[in-house]
Image 1 (cartoon, one colour):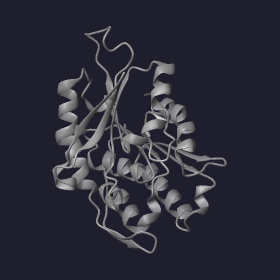
Image 2 (cartoon, helix red, strand yellow; image 1 turned 60 degrees about the vertical axis):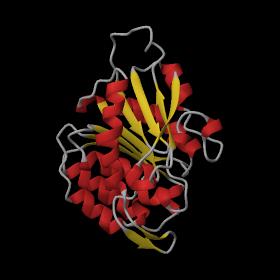
Image 3 (cartoon, one colour; image 1 turned 180 degrees about the vertical axis):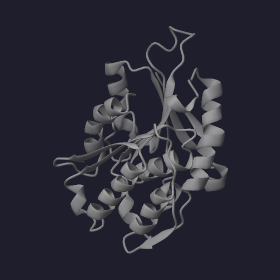
Length: 251
């Protein structure tokens, strides 16, 4: 069952509403005593159905969850579509590059809202398992970047994260330093994937991916690094990764 409602993030977009989506497993209503782990995802409009997706193609999570009948609640909030607002909201650091210009990193404010306002609301409203072992993050592109930031900054809240094609190229030195100074609990699990074709998009991709993966490995993270043959930077490619990262993280 897919539910939609409006949320606001006052520190990021004032009182302007945006859509939030929650997927409840098919047996949610039939088993009123049962509780479920929660996966928080970014770019909520692109997650469940093609009709909601920005470019007409979603990750197909609704079909996947119906097919697999996994015991998992999924919460996904729409990004701010105004100008560079999405880049700012999902960027952990402030940076400037030729392609995007000057971007003020507001991911700390976004994750603060998610952890201290959205998560308590979800845990109060739905039958969740709110502990760290049952709370995860997932996203792609800039959404994959904030997922990588979030599991480090709030490692006491999230144990697992799927970071598909995270945009490490936007500020490689700063983002590598961010990972290098972060402490992770020994049971932290991160799924990191890139497509072979998208590796060609930015010159920094090759070294920053291997450098970040190396830092995570040295820090004892349970890391899955996957380079996808003929993989591209798009929802159709990320949809194919869904069953792989879900199984890898045992979600």
